[in-house]
Image (tube, rainbow, N blue to C red; front, side, top):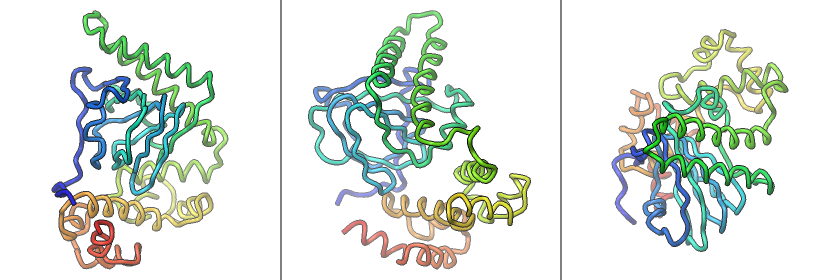
Length: 285
């Protein structure tokens, strides 16, 4: 088994586009896929348009089959890697950091968690593929006097096209019930604050509602309590670090906001049915 990293690798964005990168690659561009079989995160928002062939990707311990004419969004926090052979592949990928992303789109992307591949109808695939080609041409025309604006605006339009496909898979905001709206706000806040905020009352206070009402909303919408969601988000991060790094359980506990290491160990065992060390051994056999 290859040596694990001291922490989960975070791949930075290519700086040539000033926080934006876009390209189309095929099997002959083998170098374009180098390193993708190693688990990693990004420091940007990543989008993949699968044009030809099928790839298999593992994202946070879930296996996904990404078929032709589908699109995939990967959040910066998600740990992922390519799996299996890469054969007869053509895919486009684009990356954009928070600074260049339209703030409205950033908020919408926070709701797409966890993301999964979305199949595209013929016309929609054609529109997105054509827009990718246009964005690639803008990306390469660095001599343009309005290069930054052209690239940023065109790539945000591309992001908007993808978001609209994901929104088609979910209820639109104007059709959400009060319970669903509060649950969505809680889950977005949880993603940003799970390391520092561990109590339901802390989230309720930030949302300007009572803890009991927040719990009612979340449980009615998801079937699980606020505490369960907090615990599961922390455990996901713990599993990521146990699997993808060689940090000790004590170091992981501290990184996740638990000064009381024995308490964290008991919490992990209760939530997963095994100790942290047993989880690490089981997933590296």
